[in-house]
Image (cartoon, helix red, strand yellow):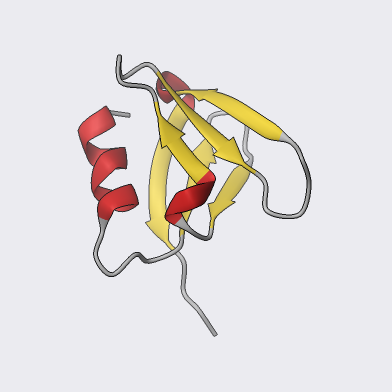
Length: 72
């Protein structure tokens, strides 16, 4: 995944929650722009989980797609 594409999702105004789909089959929800940080070098993204103190560093090469969430 290119950093520029992920940056577009993160900087959308107004922000729209989205899903990050990984090569291992997982989907990570990004519900607010405060919960994701992009590495300036363009290699990784850090996702902060809303309900816990956990963080996950994701290699951008492991991202296969992004999708805006369909809110119900």
